[in-house]
Length: 81
Length: 230
Image (cartoon, rainbow over all chains, first blue to last red):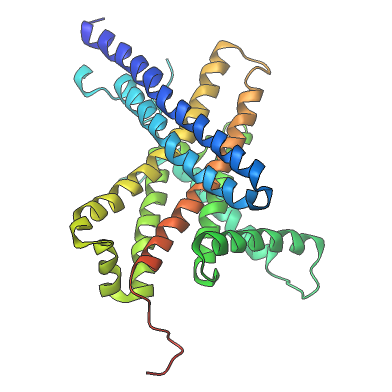
């Protein structure tokens, strides 16, 4: 196995592990804020949860991008052809 | 070695066109949905039976979501948004059937759906405000934003595609890995999580399509009222 493959695998793991930190923290904050808002105003729970879901999907996309980059490195690496 | 999730193998060739398993599954789903829709709506009565009430509930939920998110009457958007939601939902849940991979776990299907949303945004935008009104939405809030708005309309389509693909594909992928490590009963909680993700992603895809369409409706100048004689 040449060094390029080793670096690719290492970078794929790095991309997923570090790319998950930011979205995880952000989703935690978003859910905490939404819980707080629902606890204060239970009557607007449906609007808050709908907005929360959309926001979570937006945040989650960052982690998904990292996953796609990792999969590109592992399965469709143009340098390893 | 696990097969790459980014490529799909051709099942057979129809002339020069390679037909993949995803395409076959998609067409089967489409057939089932169209036939089911035709059967369900064949004998509608004013006093609904239990079955009709169930499907009316679905349509009603889609309507109320459109009304809440887009702040318009759901009439012109119900067909597009509802079809998107129901198709993605059913496609994501085909993981339940053994031997069938959800077509949304492949890049092509998601790309097609995202391009549909991209075209629908232009279509509904032009229908609401005319070509000039639609182009004017790019210049909000100021003409300096034109390149950014234009770029955004492309990148948000791309992110729509990558989000659905990444979520569904990662679910299928993780189940494949766990299945190769430990066979019986171990992947079941992950499959349950996968069903939840599939439902949420279908909902989010529909909601985001609504948000994008509503963006072109409300940012432009107010459309002339067609009922008002001028």
